[in-house]
Length: 122
Image (cartoon, rainbow, N blue to C red; front, side, top):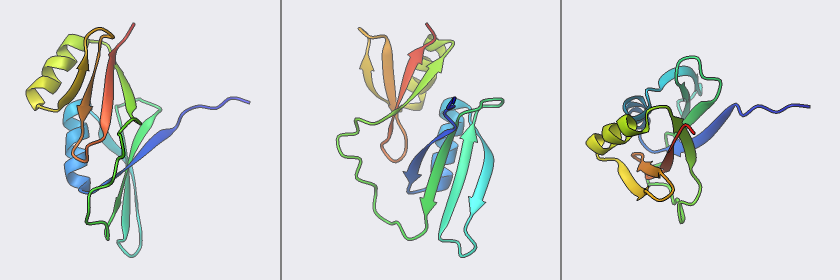
């Protein structure tokens, strides 16, 4: 039996703002959308072209308050082939929220405050 990671899901307060962030920060595009018949939720799967793993953004119409992320210890990690270029891009966006030069990694915060880890391809 073999398992393959398919997607990771985060719930977002402003779907369009989140989609724009992930497109700008990571080059993701919408690859699939599920909409409820009554408009109570939208689920958008985003990924890089040709990627088999997706990020699922789930939006609920009735949600008006930001999500409680606790200590924000849970995160999604991204590996990048040009770490320096990615760092410069995210620095320009103003979304780097934590750096650990000793480990050679940094984190960016999305519009909802979720942390995304960026590590170089090693």
